[in-house]
Length: 328
Image (tube, rainbow, N blue to C red; front, side, top):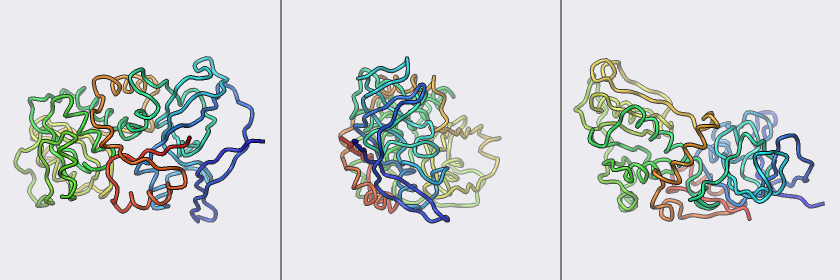
């Protein structure tokens, strides 16, 4: 009987193990779909899971991978038919249900959406969870009345997947985007995807209640002192979306930015984003938010056997943009 390969994360007696396993095909459950995965991508959270730097999976044994795109092979659902092009982001993939680092996946219909018309299986994963997260962040600040004329938007963690795609998307919408990165050798790359200005120098962390008004808002991927500095440096009624904590999960701030300048801190979770709104966001990604520089941002394609090596590189900060994983 034919087998398929997956990258599996397991914990036994609190010991982390990563391995490529083979699984048997089986019959479909109610409302379940069998998808032949064409592409997945390596997200920072995936790298944490694969390396064991953080325990991401919520069970003792699971296939990694937060997202995938592929073709329906078999369906026990009225919503999807054989041959449909589908994608999945969030929904607990790689955390509490089997994820996209696999040649095939059995998945409930509620986790899937159809690939939008203006995207294909490759571009869907060149965007992937990182682009989906960036788009949710942009949607959130726009709903909170962020305007182009308000001034510049700072994107931290700018060379990562979320940061790169946020820069591209916001530039397309007409925002003046400033990128923050300590990697001076990445300045040319950041300018090429839409950053109008770049901050390489680590900001001065002081005890002031407020800094000068510099930014109209921001998309923060790093947390810690950088987020604290951004909050104190944001103009009246500015919106900051907190996405990640690559630097630190701690936040040392005070109430002055909130009660004097009415600065808004907005949180998002791509994992728990409602199904009906996932379709809407992906439709916008395929249209008004669509990145223009996917070939530059997702320039690297790897295979299942390469995932461990590139996860280690990503944790060390030695990767740029998006990494696509080709399964077939």
